[in-house]
Length: 189
Image (cartoon, rainbow, N blue to C red):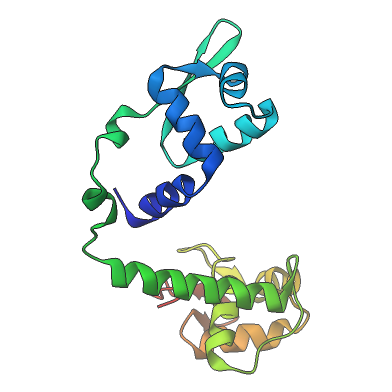
């Protein structure tokens, strides 16, 4: 089990309604209406919480005629708390999550939909933006300058600047107005 699944399980268990649903399902598999009646919650509320529990892998479902029957995931419930919380690379996971959250924040700040509003001044942020442009090009494909301009222009008006920066940073190569991406370049790396 990876750490993200374990976190999702822990979050799922931090809700009283979900714990009530799980306790009910430990007695026997049930359908939404039956669970709602047993624990005195609205069917919509039960459905909402069942989706969260299913997403965390804590419950399974199967179809029986007109009903969807839910049951606990026995395999998961036999895991110990130690198995759910012991990880070898927890520091790596935390660091990757931090980097990904920062990346998402930068993209949200500088993009409106698919359009880049402006290129950041700070190099770290600028590289995140350039990585997004790098992903727009196919590895192994050669592009005429006009096509490169067209691809960039759909996201930012100053295509010359983006194109030049991509070449300067080794993301893309150019020879005789033919361009191709550096397949050895690693976005985010």
